[in-house]
Amino acid sequence: MSQIDSQSKFAPEIGAPGKKPKVDKNFERPGGSFEPSDEQFATSTMSDAAVAGQWKLMWWKFRKHKLAMAGTVVTIIIYIIALFAEFIAPYHPTTNFSQYTYTPPQFPRVVDTSDGIDFGFFVHGYQSEVDTTSFQRVFTVDESIKIPMGFFVKGEPYELWGIIPMERHLFGPKNPDDQAFMLGTDRLGRDMLSRVIYGARISMSIGLVGVALSVVLGIALGGASGYYGGRVDNVIQRAIEVIRSIPTIPLWMGLAAALPPGWSGLKVYFGITVILSFIGWTGLARVVRGRFMAMREEDFVTAAKLDGSSERRIIFRHMVPSFMSHIIASVTLSIPAMILAETSLSFLGLGLRPPTVSWGVLLQEAQNIRTVATAPWLFAPGVAIVIAVLALNFMGDGLRDAADPYR
Image 1: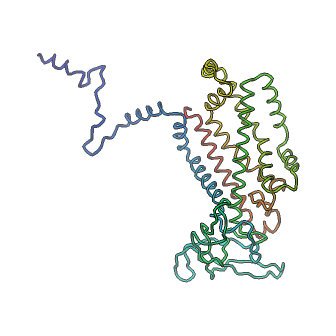
Image 2: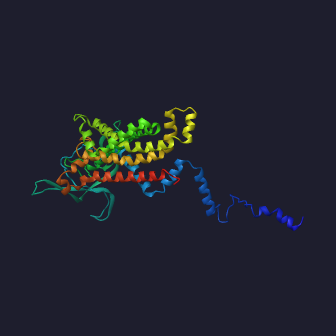
Image 3: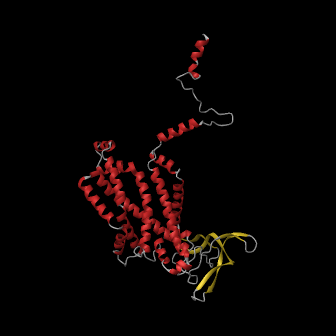
């Protein structure tokens, strides 16, 4: 065999034109394991994205949104606190210490420098004196008194979720006879930290329940409006326009005032939830209507009709799942609006009422001059509202951007 023939025979193996050289993926470099080049890594990443499902693409895009991830973590923490409020709160929200009214916060410390350097979890005690001008007892933090604190300490007995009897709290004074108020107390001597923790359960859950009802109404009425069209669409759209044309605050006030004054706190809670849901479904219904009108002539809907699927199956099995990501993003952005609406109604005295504990009810305590002048810690529920709303908005923005992962 000639030299030319031998070269042409092995040309495809050594990179002849039109042939790609074979690459051994198990090849190990002298320094260690196989490391793909940048081009190979980009190619593999693109191939993974090409076969990934919609939810995986959403997650890949969502985790790149730093604020959304931070908001998600904060939101999860708030809901965990609300779920285990009895265990996390040092005291029951209605427990009052009449000798400690309007006491300032006792900030926890881990280093004591008053007498050398001492490490530990503690708070400083109080020293009281009578104001000669107003003849009111005024409390100040006395750094010479040290109250040891601990975790998983015994305290007031309670029932977790109203079922499991317990007496252990996440943190509190090691000596049950000592009192520690990390966010101070209100006019009746009730611990503000415990009341804010318990208030998270009502304020955060009313957003979830209200949005759940709004989603049901929005998908059902908006889907019927966009799928059937004609007279059904006209009736539903005119109803939406009437509701959206009424000023929100007067409508809330009118519906909330219609609640019977003798109702218990639980009934008022569900009444306020229904009121917020009755107002909040219109925006989602408009979005669902537009998507249904765009999809009802699509090939997959026509194929489902020819296959003999019922209208309910076409709507809930084929059409709604196709834009479920957008619904999730809309729902996440609607929860802060529900929380602010409940807070506004309760702050005005038209929503939840004491002894029910919510952030809006707690802010009613801040409607006096003394709070602004001498007890600013009573605005702590407002800070909690700001944190929760910002966290939910950041998470909702991230979900909205990730809802279209191909963009």
